[in-house]
Structures are given as structure tokens and as C-alpha cells.
Length: 151
Image (cartoon, rainbow, N blue to C red; front, side):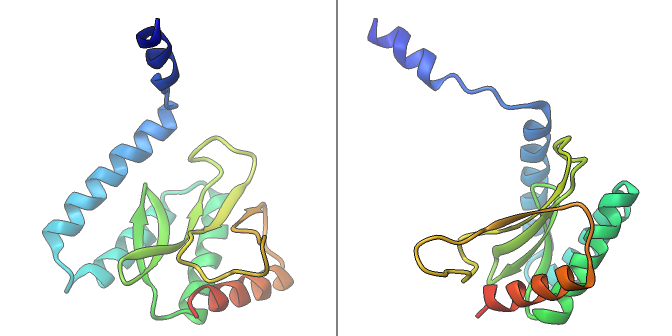
């Protein structure tokens, strides 16, 4: 009986999109290992720009703006693909990422910050934001978040 219950509890079903993202991540790791650290930043940026160029129009516009905001506000971050998403890393660890709406068939894109981002504000703070479009005020707020994330 215990074996049956354990089998039931451990059965995990990933969506097709999640499985595809995991395969992309495995390929990204292989590519990074082949390139070595010297070429990683330039190649990573090319990879990110190519991924952005493949996005549908609404996601592409958002991703292009996020890329520009990150480059302006945290030029020391290294662009790289992470689970097939444009991301920006510090010392090899992803600080923030852009997830297109199309990738997981969501109604909005996501700008997410990982735990390495220093966005701490008391005992609770946001670490992901839904995006449908960006206003000038949104861009300014994202720039401030990016700067805070890398302090």
C-alpha cells in the first residue's frame, strides 16, 4: 500500500511547453560548455537577440525594450538564454529573465527576478511582473528594479 501511495505522489506530469523548455536548457548548457567563458558574453547576446527576433510581434516588442533597459541600467549583466528565454546573469547566475506570453500560452509576458536579485523589501516583495505593454513610467520602474537587482 505504501508503495502505491508513493508512486501516486511522485507521478509528475510536465506540459509539452515545460518539456520543450527543459530540452532547450539542456542544449543551452551544452552550447555554453563548448564555447567556454571567453566568448560567452558576445555569443550569449547574439543568442538572446536571435531568440527575441523569433518572437511574435507583441512579445518581441516587449523583449526588445527589456533588453535595452537591462543594457542601459546594468551593463555588467551577461545576456544568455535560460530555458529558451532571454535572461541576464551575474557571475553565471541568472538575475532576471523575460518569458514571452507565447512560450507557455499565457495571456501576458513575464519579467521575472531570481533569488540572486537583491529586491528585498521587508519580509515580502514582488519577484515577477506581468507585462502586456510598456509605458514610459513602466520602463522607468523596470530600470530602477534592474539597478536594485544588481546592487
